[in-house]
Image (cartoon, rainbow, N blue to C red; front, side):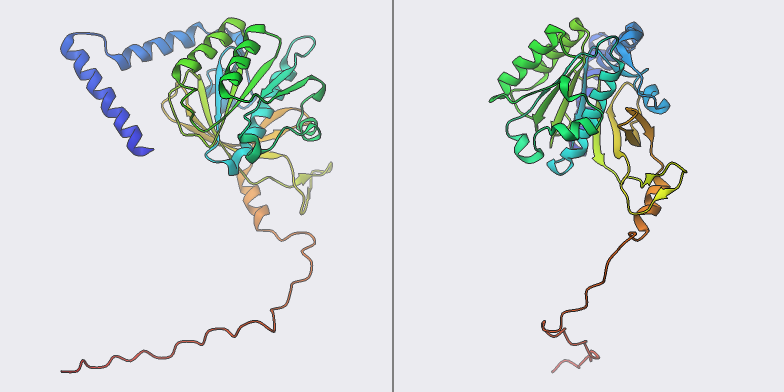
Length: 308
């Protein structure tokens, strides 16, 4: 990944050198100016604040409701965290919908669901989603999934469309991403792109998050004390990989499914709770008596003179 980033920087530098020699505008400067104009022209109504000040500042005011936001997991072992964060965003969007909330559409990947699993209604409800307004599709091919996502955005029927993709397929490149972005912009509806076990690549997504699991805190009782050995709200280790800000943002975000609200997780307390023993650890098993004998300890090592 570092080598790829270095290669991209080299290409950008060569393009700028050629542009200077030919007297043309610098590509990087032109792109930066275009991004600044786009940020200035963004409709405040098309932004959804997430309620976390540093995150909203990095997102230029909030989550875009008329574009693509990509959520990436480094591997299928982190698919649960990435899926949970996408569902939390969908629940947040669903809650903020004016009037009668519009439904949410999840377009799943047929191969990814074998590793990450399918949507579970009880879990969706516990995570803050209204399962009566949650639709799930499982197309047979990626081309069908892209067509369905484009049609869902164009219809404007859904408050959010979730598109699940496995890895970095050739059938979903910059051209397909750009087409979906134009559909989302025209309809004023967000597309949440969930990429499992994928690498960073160029796309039309306005922002890209890397989501990894984090240690949850203990459940808090009504009197403010912590219930030992319990599991509290979900916590995500979030890294904002793509944004208009030069420095990436990394933080631990906690999701309260009851209030459908994000909070910055208190990591020192989490680390301390991880070191605390369980409330009921149970009996410790004794060592096996019929196992193999342990290896004998090594004695002193002597150095002998070499024979002539």
